[in-house]
Length: 292
Image (tube, rainbow, N blue to C red; front, side, top):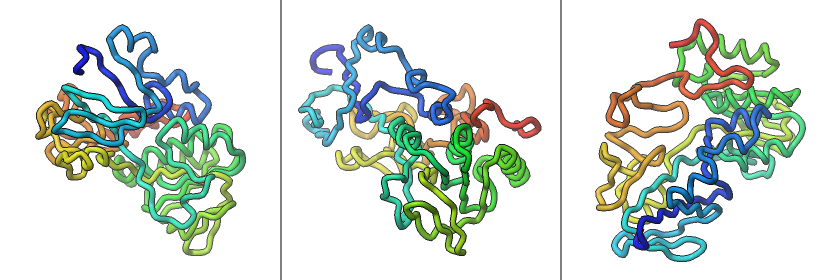
């Protein structure tokens, strides 16, 4: 930064950086939110990092090397976009109601936990399965609705998906495959075939997409994500992007998506690790016989 070695870290969430993979244990009441922090609060001042939580960057001027936030203007010499992913929210009738939540932030988890009663999770990928298992720890009625024919189809084969569905059923979670949702109502989720499932709260786990909005508005080259090379640099000098917001050689990174081979870093060959980060509440590993 222009003032020396100081490094402002700006984020719109009202807290320090935390591990989103640990949201499932928080939802399942197995961990406190404070246990998900990536670093202790004392680390930041020791490394000349100023955390500006609850502050949103609204514009970036690449030519002038300035940015505008909800609190004012800053100058910069090196700028790193680490904006992560945004939840994909399908255009379903009723999706904007206050009892409908994404599963992406601590605020989402707090909102879900603040409502009692039956829960419906929409989406049978990694996040949906984890959310359903976590909710079942303290909710008597949990239904998982999935558009596809099997759970976690992008990560595991049909047989493993059937075994996973049986495991969830043993825990009391009703799984409904090939669900076509007609609408989310105040107290239920309706399918196109007429079936309805009670829901005082609805959790959307329908995928994520790179958060490239600010970068695009700033004039950076983007495709699915912010385009960077294998050193994570954009085409603009002094501007980089890291994590789920970036795209490298046509690949993006998100929940349950493509990851780098162990030891390969971002330059390693892309592989799919079906159990990477996967955790059912009360179980921190894949079922025996299904490790790949």
